[in-house]
Image (cartoon, rainbow, N blue to C red; front, side):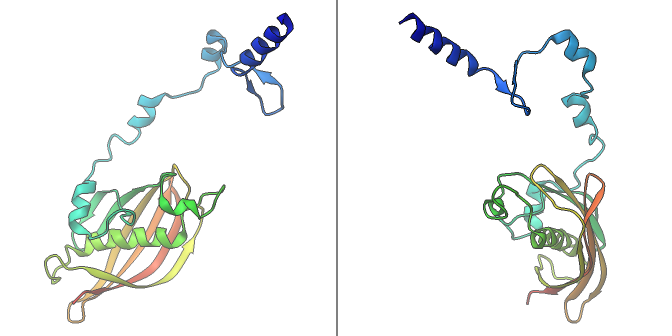
Length: 201
């Protein structure tokens, strides 16, 4: 009986010990003084402060007024720079809760490239809402894309920072051309030379 109790207590105690990558058990509680000396952590406040100067020109609620897209297909979270009818910089926070990660790909989640392109197209839709000569509340359909290049995978936890610029707008036919790029951590993730949009009639 004593042996059984001893084995049970050892088993319970080992539940609080995590295995290290090399298979040896490591203690969860570290020596505080040693951890402080070796720590290179910035901390939450310092990391959060890195974006303190980036203000929202349009909040997510404002974006909903520009675009008809809704969950799970609303791909612009906020706009941080905006020139009506000309250009904008927008943000898409990529989380592991996105519907598309269920199948793209299990165990290796990557944001589909076509949705990165769609996110830039939606940002362009916000810019086109301010086009001179466009009807108030006009919706533009995504008609095509040329010169698309994907440079790096976009994964859960990434912040996709997109910039789009209107190249030209034909008022008579309601055709608009735009270009775009998107970055993660300052590195180019995707670019499109030209997107074509048609104003809905």
